[in-house]
Image 1 (cartoon, rainbow, N blue to C red):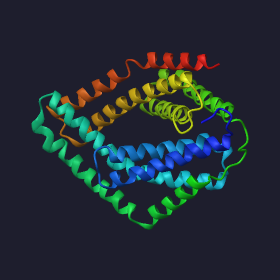
Image 2 (image 1 turned 180 degrees about the horizontal axis):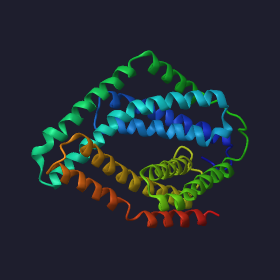
Image 3 (image 1 turned 90 degrees about the vertical axis):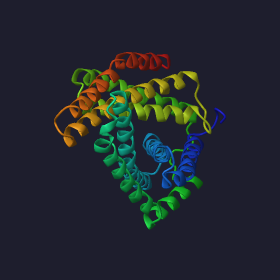
Image 4 (image 1 turned 135 degrees about the horizontal axis):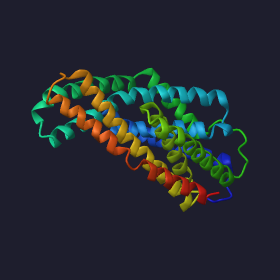
Length: 283
């Protein structure tokens, strides 16, 4: 996309691309193909992020309604996806600990629960709510409800990316001091939002900004990934402690999961420094 395009053209291109990804990825998610639910959930999250980040250039009422509906879909997808992640992580952990005989007690119930959660999503996908959402998405893809569309896109995009970087880095001192699961999760969400914003304006079909913004998005992605690994391991430990007998070898599984959660945080200060350096290069 040429650098002289307007903000309206940029926003319309980003939204149409994300709507297309959702439509493309829906069938695989309904069929529960490998990574299908995860890919669809990611696309839904990216579209919600775009609606929020570009909110000053979209009419408020329809944008709020679409974000709400996408949030409902994201929550519906989140149940089977989180169960899938937990089962896979637990399966790997049992293999590492040579405790494969515990799979029937620990992993199989999660797989069974995942199947039920996926069937709930699949049933939704064939209903009226899904049809209404897809019709709304098609309307937005054809022509989103823009406002203030004539501003130069490159200037607006740069400001949005820097704003997300500032928000993310602004959380860091309190998060590192507190280091609570809730604070770390909030930082993860902000880093993910930064990543999605940077990628929206550096990748096709927009591709307005260059390598420095790519680096900024990569730094946000590193924080998101690290904190995601931490959260997944911590939630796994809590799940085992809550549902399994308080005895060996189950306690060893929970303890190892907590060790993995701690290990995931070891490089966080370095990731934050990388993000700060990438942000400063754009000043």
